Image (tube, rainbow, N blue to C red; front, side, top):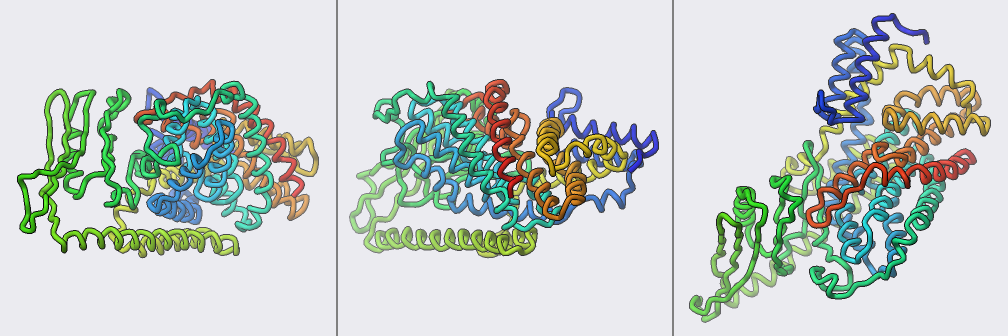
Length: 566
């Protein structure tokens, strides 16, 4: 393909550069509008500059990819509500035998979870739990945060639903879920093992401290066999603007009546509107809303919330029972807000109703969770059978929405529509840049030396993918290189074409471990760790780079040998 006219080339490069700058550096001083607005701006400029027509722009939007993204988001939201990620967190703490065993579990659990629920989702819901686990056992957070981010990226390479670039590759190549899994899964397993060994060697000295669980160090930890109780794990939800806290389906179970004071840390003063009070002693949703509004109205840095239940001997019902009162006290330097519940009936009939209600609620929750898990399993079976991936995910999402028997608006509001809009703008911007002819001209210079029928060609192709994935991000890299790499390999054989797609999927995903900016999962772990309410930790760019460079090179080299031998 020859280069387009000079004006189209120049204007197309300007539009793509603006998109690239805002996608890689979303908070640049001269235009801090973010990635989503940046992608839409790039798409709009491609049309305004007449690099492509409006009809071509609409045609560039890949609806199957958007449908697959939407479906997997909804399924992940329901799995989160069904406490799937809480169970994964419990698996990390259950009978842990030391710091090295804990690091191994973090690598394994995050890799498997990312392959099934996407790497971004895994990092969102597990970061704060891992921070708590490390701090409560006097362990340094850095190795465990790096284990979560890097293993999530490597693990997500095994399936088409593991990350966005794999979704693009699966739809464009036509490779089935089963073929994708068979081709990349062995490389993923070996890659996770190699990454774990690198982490152990790199942080051996820091992980060799005694693994203590004494009561003094963990005085604030809940009682029980695990380090942290299931319902103490902070859960997260997806929203278009941000990722905030939410409670699980059974977070307000009547059987859980433990109450404890919570004090806001200094880090919360930077974002008071994101504080979510998670007291487990409320009886009514109205009390929760009143308490939250009173907390948000406070402008002071220190605040205490206490929930207590007292028995007033002066209050008696008709049968002589003592009526307990539940008092919620919110205090600060400015005011004190007390919410008092009405006395509870303690008659014989009331006790029977109270005993029957939790049992009925537990059964409903159990049935609902089972339906969520079975629906998700059905979606995975449909994908393995080679059915259309987009419609399989959308069908599973709609089944879950129907089984919820509530207004779907609350669930659909948690879908990250900003990500879907970002993809729309990116599809148009990349398609417009392709029309300038520059990507094709550059590929023609590299293509003769990067064919996968030789070891040198495969190595050069991997280097190109690694560099471009960290310069332009992995999804644009896949959109720019995918069809060209496949066309080059198709000349060799149809099997080589499929292998080229799998190489692109594995290398572009592992390339995200090279730098902190190489993957959205890395940024999520970094930001979630920095904003953690009580266990904040700052994962710096250079601390990630010192581990990321050797890990990425070694894992890519080992995994590439396995994928090529497929």
